[in-house]
Picture (cartoon, rainbow, N blue to C red):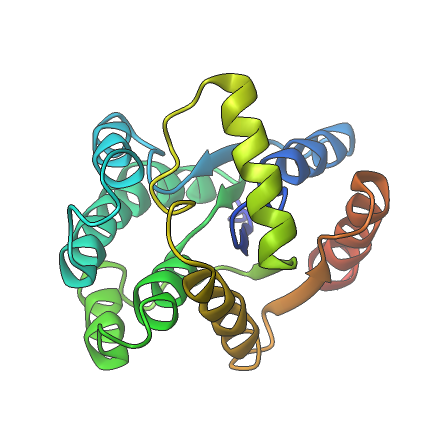
Length: 215
């Protein structure tokens, strides 16, 4: 049986990843493709416990190195227990965040207080030579994205606002980091997340067809 494809969606707070993953999964399922949607952190039962630790509470309760280590602990479990088994069954996996978020947040966001070399070594130790087939970076003005994210959390009475509480410089660094990351490999595609949900979905479908379905 042929293995499936691994697609990741990345971007700053409020970029609309959750909505677009749902729409993309529905599109692929309509074409007869079996899809698994997941997220980081939180794609496994242990990951959900780590997500609560990482995404709620005081914004300064971990230093950037501790955060990176926890994210990679989650990632190792996620890849081994969920992503690889699904791909080996021929399913497509779509994840809300993967390792590019760790590089963007813990390296660029924190103004390089964690070394890029350390993050690259952690990737090799925990993930190895496995990479996404396609990474869609949803780019949005940080002020617009933060307003969206805070509004959503208020409506849902959510508590996952640990990163929303950081200064605007952090989020500007984060955005620039994702754009820098996008230059490093052909698997990346940057899309404007400030457009309508429908127009962004069309662009995502077009990219998936060009890069994976019709290749």
